[in-house]
Image 1 (cartoon, one colour):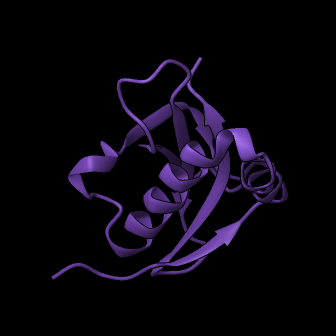
Image 2 (image 1 turned 120 degrees about the vertical axis):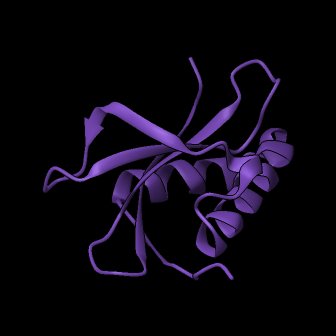
Length: 100
């Protein structure tokens, strides 16, 4: 049985997601990110997300930051960066960006 998580957004993450949503040329990528966010809320360890710790970033209170895959095998594939919190059963999305 997997837990459900409430999703919170930083302003940057909201801007990232809004930019994807408003660009018709990125519709396929927007849908992939939206699906990844849904999976993240249901189960941050879902196998298709390939979630792993991203050690070069930390949350505002030193939280471990994780990277989840929205796309795979695609040039400049999108990733979702997040951490657990601020409270139990909550996740904060930090950024949604293309993989370099």
